[in-house]
Image (cartoon, rainbow, N blue to C red; front, side, top):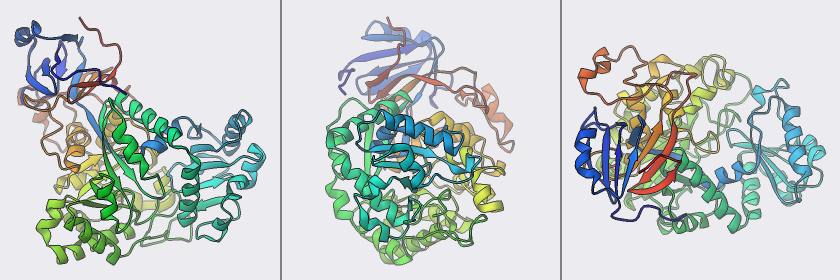
Length: 537
């Protein structure tokens, strides 16, 4: 990946719509090197045309701040893109057929598949290890569930790690979760070479740029990736900027040595709802289990204190209400050690935080804790007929409370958790605006801000994510299939904001079922990191 926009290059984009609070009716924008130098209308742009190295005719396209994905796993995403995609399989047998077809042309090395979801299959169950063996023969195979917290593996892979049979979370039918899953994933990581990992990371970053994403938060952890990935990422050029986190308990010094912003991210307080490993205060609606919590209050407290004193961000993966409550209590315990001001300054973060009550939300707001959340989770699994309702019954209505978090003043940073859900930021904005629970909906503008400025604020860059003279030239150019408007799906939002006289900048119409915008260009601080045939002259 090499730079395609040298420092000092002057670019003028005209004839579109520019999302800029300083000029809500802007149609043009001028860039000089790494910065925006002017925003205005096409008439005003004429003074910059003669000096521009490139004039981009937008033909009505939208120019807006580029997106930030606040939760991604780059190597895993890259491997998933080149592995067996099981997400669209309509049945257990269809999934096995897909694996069998790829295995038949496979060279015998590790075969991976991702995205299966037994709740969408008529059989209502996962495949077994024996069924996978019949499909693939004597090949090491790892097939991950859509939530990334359990998998089914072949006998050939288990033969490489016979001790896993004695680890918590192993079952005789070839399914692994919890500690056993972590052990298996560690073996999978060891089977992948450094060049393969580099290629996978490059593939993921190229895809991110093509989706209008200029920055990514990489959430590494011992059960997900290897520490060498951070050095690989730093060696790459020309793609999105990457901010690293290493999720390992009591390893603030290691996170700093790796060049990370925090010992945070996928430091798991629990698992996931789909795999029934998220920790609940009451049993699941469809199983005699309350999930599994991996950390206690003292673990959380000590980790937060250590990170705060090291000027690093702490953070935890927490989904179930029991896990979230434990993490919140741990933060309050840490406050008693280092004080509120130190916690607010550190800007710690929680990942997913899907089941949080009003008291927990108030604590997050009070201590300046960022909510790194994934709106597409609600779009895919929310609602009265979704996975969450199957697993949790009526409790699902209170999940993913984006609106409540925003109203309380909690900083929201949207992400994908790719490869769990894909790089698709407009889908995330739409999911937040049209949440299954009406009380938790946000305006499109607020959701867009959470996926742009919110991601920058989560890495303690409060000046980024806007287009104005003097700001970084970090933006994306979009072809919008529908109209541009001020969309307020929540009827409680004052109607004046949709009136052009209010001076509110417009964004794409994102009604469910409508086509989403497509990215034509992505710039990171003036560097063109994605280009899809925008006419120039």
